[in-house]
Image 1 (cartoon, rainbow, N blue to C red):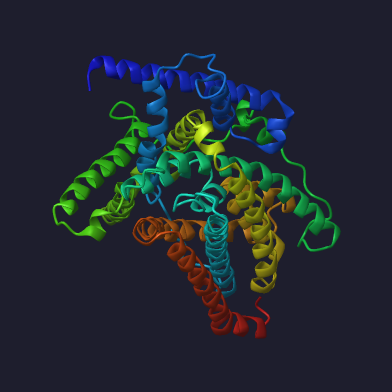
Image 2: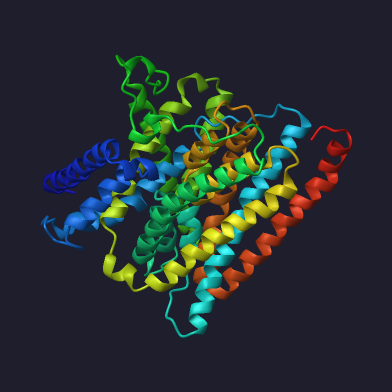
Length: 463
């Protein structure tokens, strides 16, 4: 890469930065953006998309920049995923009843993932039966967009690229679209569900929904005294900045992952060679974090700072993915996309409401609404909805949700390369069958957990 190439990359990132700032300003000023909680990266990305070459073509953006924007999410997802295990703390304490609820919440998340995969690939098969041409991976975007959010559009593209799927760019666009529908629809429907539950005395501690703090809507805290800390300065800036230290740790592991991938490919093993580099990065980070803890150097790592590093990359990955959305290619799948979005949202509500009532004998709605938020948006969407129906954090739901989400993330990251391999090797029908089988497996696990643990806790009045 020449100096001129680096300058062009800097210019391209500068344009993304301008629209990220515009998105931040608009989020702070326009009510509809505040009420739907659209991130600044999504707002700025859609503006850049509209004014860019794919729609109005007012901004004459070079093709090389648009190509870079399209590829950027698939590249940035590697350090984003790699950062996950760093600084992770798995709590082994708590009562048996609480651990049971965490286990059931984890299984509820897994059930929802399997249900969304079943719906997505089922839609694919139905439209194909009527002669509608769809690519094999169509349907995966429902789960990747609804559960994963905008950031996972790049992960989907990376996965499909790794198995040689030529439709990775279209799938990235479809996933981005589904993520936007899920985020907006999930928040609006989530608030409606909270009002419904409050009127029917289904909530544990709520007479009427709590007020959403203004800071959450506008996207900033004006009072400097109330602004939360970004984390601990684990290193002295005279040696190395704490942010740079965490970034260096993450990028070092990414480099190790690429080296490991090269070594594995030399073994000529078709299964191992098909594993994406981000999967190696995640596994290596677990090992690196374990070594750091064993050496008693974990004081150098702060989960908040790590989160800010990953969060910064996610914002740029999202605005790049949205701004490079190939409208023409994605619009060819408009009808099946709309069907997938509607059936997926209805299915998500039904699965969570029906199963949560059976799985939780205490605070079922609070546990359900948190998973609903995560299952249609991102982790923070679940926190937001939970905060509305449990403003004073009187229930166990937030704590249980945070722990269950951590484990669910690990399970999902392990399974995703398997999904990509199934789709590339055997196609949509086999992936649909796998999704249905997975749905039953998680359901059986939930029943077994109730039989082996829940019944005894209920008999002792601990649930």
